[in-house]
Every structure is written in C-alpha cells, then in structure tokens.
Image 1 (tube, rainbow, N blue to C red):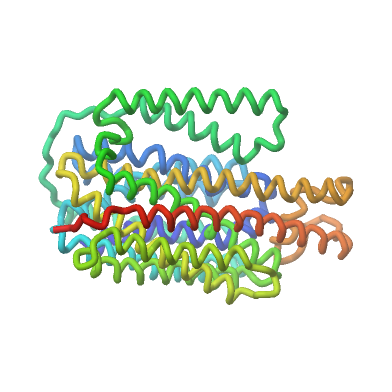
Image 2 (tube, rainbow, N blue to C red; image 1 turned 90 degrees about the vertical axis):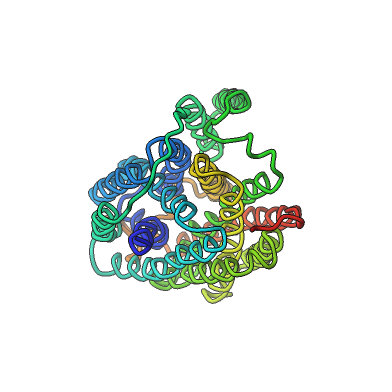
Length: 483
C-alpha cells in the first residue's frame, strides 16, 4: 500500500522538476514567452482551488474514490499536454492536470494520517518526501535528456506508466472504513476562491500591460471577490478553508508559513533553470542538475524532521526550516552569472532543506490536532495555502520579470528590434527557431543582460519571502508538543 502511495506521490513530484527543466526548450518551440509563468500558474491555480474540494468530498465519501478518479484525470491531461501546439493550449491542459493533482496529492497525505499513529506519521511523511528526492533527481535528468534527444512532449508522457501502475495497485490494495458525516462540499466558497485568485493572478502577472482603467477595475473586482470569500468563510462552518481551526495559533502559523514557503519554492523552481540556461549559457541538463539539489535537500530534511518532531517539538523544527530558507534566499539574492551553476545548486539545496522542515512540521502538527472526520479538510487547507503561495508567487514573480524586461527594452530604445519574445531565442539551444534570421550578437547580449536583471529582481522578492518565513517560524509556540 505504502509503495503504491509513494508511486502516486511521484506523479506530482516528478511533474514539477521535469517540466521546470524542459520549459525553456518548450517555450522556444511553441513561442509565447509572455505565458511562461502561466504554464506553472495554471497548474497550481486549479490544484489550489480543487485541493480543499477534494478534501471535503473525501471526508464525505472516503479517500479511495477521490484518489482513483484524480489519477485518471491527471493522466488524461498529461497526454493532452504532449499534443499541445501552442502555449495557450498547453496552459489550458495544465489547468486540467492541476485538477487531477489536487485530488491525489491531498489523498496521499491524508491517508498517511489515517493509516498511521502520531509517532509513525513523521516517519511516513519522510518516506513520502523521499519520493521527491528520487523522482526529482530523475525529473531534471529526464527533462534534460528528453529535450536534447526526443520531442518535448515526452516530458508529459513520461509519467503515464507510473500512473497506470499506481491506479491498479491502489484499486486492489487500498481498504478503508468510511465514517459518513453528511457534510456538504463548499461549492460557493470554491467558486469565490477561483474567481478571486484568478483575478489576482492576472493583475499581478499582466497588470503592467493593462491600461490604468482596466487595472483599477480588475483590482476592485479582486478586492470584492476576496472580501466576499472572507465573509463566506467566517459565516460557514466547514467551508473550503476551515477557519474555525485557525483559532489554534499552531494551526494558524503552520498554514501561513505554508503560504510563504510556497512563494519561495515557486521562485526557485520556475526561475533557476532559465537563469542557468538563458543567462549563464549552460545546457538544459546542467540547469536540471543545478535544481536537483533542492530535491535532494527536501527529503533529507523531511526525514530528519520526522525524527526530531517529538523530542524537539514542531516549533523548533519549524525554526530550523526558517533559518535554512533565510540562508538559501540570501544566496539567491547575491547570485550573479559569473558564480556559475554550483552557486545555484548550493542555494537550491538550502531552500530544499527549508521546505522539508517547514512542510513536515506543518502537516504533522495539523493532522495531530484534528479528528478523522476533519483530517482531510484540514490537510487540504494546509496544502491549499502552500499552493496559493505557489500560484500567487508564480503570477507575481512572472509580472516582475516581464515588467523588468519590457522596461529595459524601452529604456534602451530598441523596441523595434527586441521584444519580450526575443527571450525565447536565449532559451533555445539552437539559438533561433527554424526560418528566423539570427540577431546581431550585440542584441543577444543586451537581451541576455535584461533577462539576468529581471530574474535577479525575482530573486530579490524570493529573498524577502524567505526572510518572512524565518520570522514566522520564530513565532511558532514552543510550548506545544506532539504525543
């Protein structure tokens, strides 16, 4: 059973690193660099919105049906992603892929709480986190090898066999006793969350290219949607976010920390590869290796955290994660092209350690606080906060990068020669698409400098988020222990 749960977890973990490594080559093939961050944001948005829905349904009908349906949806969307011919199509299929990932990611983590005792959960979460190490080492390697030797579509088709094995294994071996609660799924809350967060992401990512009137109208719409969501959650017990549980300071800080950790995580996963490849000039395989260290640090830290949670308490393990985040964010803050990929690897490892300690502390603490009939919803809420951090971070950081490059082009007065789409040539190992005339070396050098400056601004925001995570970790109540 645990082996099949770990295989299912691998579907999501390998998806993140294999796509991140291959995205520079994908965008050079499909075009649409302005939608680069949306390939990640679309996946994360639907994963965020449907994570609590999946948790609510699972608390009503059981974990197994939600888990199996989610695997099928994810695999179908993965196949469709490989057949995309435009960046817009890829973004649309990634929406569906995120829906499937929401279900199986939530169910795997929830089942770890259902099937094991408090003392075992830290160790089991470490086993699940180790999947990130194995699959994420394979992910960058596979991504680099795929884009270098075969069609990029295999980046999405790579995980289909694993999903089929997981589906049939769980169908046979997963047995559960369902406690029917009669609780209803918060559809209204999910709709408000989808509308509000979608609008916020558009505003953050594309606001600089919208007119002032449109920007103000969209901002007002987002504000009204989020206020309506807040009122809805406050009035409804068992809403999409169980805010009544947040009266517990440990649960509140665990969820807020998960959100900020999500911003830090997406900043590294999304923008480390294009920096190594587009700015430093290394191959996709080297970019993959540089990111792999994050995937090594994560399960290592999660395993250590699982052993330390009971003797040290969740507050102290969270503080270790906060300190590692501050170190990794600082290293990214001072990253420059001449430092090379080893600097990126070291910074990524520190961020991976931070994710391992922070997320394991958060999940185990929350699962130990609630009963079975609310465990899936509470777990989903914590995963939702991390995914919202991913989603908002992807949109915000994408907006920072795009605005920086566009401003630089206008400042240099080369708008008739260069554009945001010119970045695609830096991310193409061949340097240009078929039929395109090569640009002068001076122009390519300029766009490389603008890309470097833009991503370095992204890393400034990432550092700020890492510093906030460190401050939050210092606020966790030290008096709480897990039993």
